Length: 372
Image (cartoon, rainbow, N blue to C red; front, top):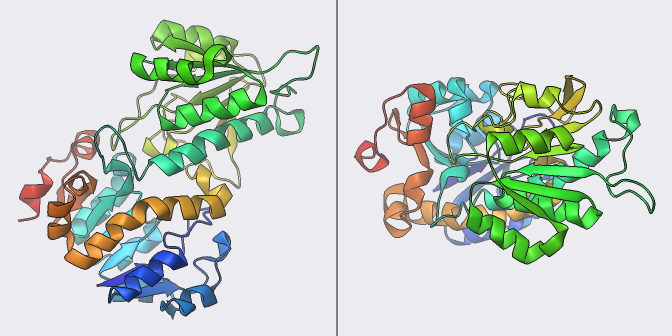
């Protein structure tokens, strides 16, 4: 197989999909790995490190795309990359198609194969989404604390406080991987932390871990409204794998918050989980917008800000499947690892993930049927 690793072009996206150790394993297995020159620089990996392990370095992204059977990326292709799509080519990356009708159409029209990291499911876990959810959850607290400071338009609150002063009130909607990571980070700062979710087993687990350092509440509209109103920092992490995120924080709730508070929407990749952030992603260049006197942080690639940590964590998780797809081909790889079926979002011009089909109005065709 010929595997291509292009440079990421999303705003301030400094991650790279393949680290040298994995490139070496692919080359040793007889595959050709094309890496665009400079692809790893943002993650502290120079071209010579790839060359030493047998990668073929190419000057231009268009050459990487043109020569490759599999494109191994971090983030979804952007419009300037659609022209590179070719029938049968496998694009293995985060796709988030339910929130991106333009990309979905381009992939269907070109009949590329989209294998999405975020929809590969093993049991109840999302192993390829988990490492970036952990990063995003921890970063959400860090970024939220930054935008609570006065120079960044916040109310001038130090989340951890000092003796004799009020600590920040951090409210986390969703107790999944990102929510749990955010809770751990906020508790570590000494904040008052409340987590809301409908999964009582997960809430019990968080109480077992953190004890009296955390408050947990069953997630209802009334409970969310009450806690959001009191919050200095709201971190919304709720998502449905592969589908559009539910809008649990309403405009009315935001209006009830005190001026200078902050909302961080970790689910913005899936369309946003608050009414104000829906369809309004931001970038690391301009991370916030203000509504109702509240700063909304809706950066669609939060982990890109800590690219060294994120690139290695992501490749550690995703390399398992790139190796088996390269070694066996997609159909036999699916036979060996049935969970890969869930990762196939589009193939042969068909939408093969139900959450995407429902969100965008396409016919849903099971991947097993569409592959034939």
